[in-house]
Length: 157
Image (cartoon, rainbow, N blue to C red):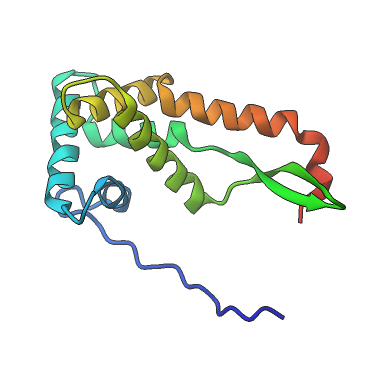
């Protein structure tokens, strides 16, 4: 019997402009040193930049599609069996899928060469919407790793 108590899921809030919990989670992940106003301004500037590109859809729809495109379905987890460590492919829970997608979008936007964060993040979101970019490449790498280690799937717990 485990000693830890049950961890309850935290209540998700909505952002004030779009009334969407995914946008609120993205803003919280983008925030650094508690400066939420700056994180909000960056993301809303990204939405303005996406609207200027005239992709034929609302910026919020493009953002949601980009996050959806980056979500991994399977990932590998280390499992130690008899002195050997195996990379066991496992399905990813929906909440973690979203968290990974958001994290990858922000990370690969920060690694881009560019002038400001809103330009880099805007380009990364548009690339993810189109099926290219660093976050999509990371998702594909994770899926390839899981496919390569499919033989160890019977070690799943």
